[in-house]
Length: 269
Image (cartoon, rainbow, N blue to C red):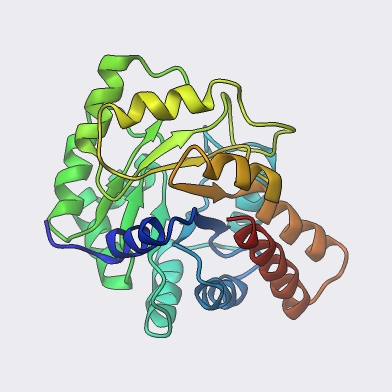
């Protein structure tokens, strides 16, 4: 399989002995202009990748912070095609890998092949379908592989060993180890079994392992970085965005606030 931006980026972080920081954005929150501006800022900060969530009304993996951002964007008339178009324009200005986080039902409704075409055409490098049934995951892997996209899958804290091995077989780019049970959202501390779960994964794959769910501050990034190859930060970013918006902040203030937070996290690596 030819290398893509995700492989190259994570490889560079590994060579330098640094933890890959992957910030998450809800696409279109508060609007597509801010999404694109933050992608450019994250690129300038040297983020390992940027994960972009596609708003969905019935998300099962996301906690209240990200669900609230989804509802706000959907209420504003969000369209999948609009997000693809915005990302395509921005891709011409950045080198950072871009990962689409989308409900399997959204991709399947459009058609897996068509969605993969749209994602590749927009400049995405990988796809995460957090709610894909394991029986349907091979189709996603096949559709993404044809377009040199990476199919990144989640391994939960409770995933049995046999199922874990099957998930890893279907993965490319990296494996997403869920750091805490339940939905996305900031936690006071990392799960006690996180290190054991990552060690278990390393016994089954040579792919990088990135952890997400519940990581929300520099100390947690530092701790997780001793265990895994990368960390994904979502709810802590989205919460800061929503708070800045609700406090009357303009777009520049929202972007500056989030960029400063991600820069702080990156220093912890």
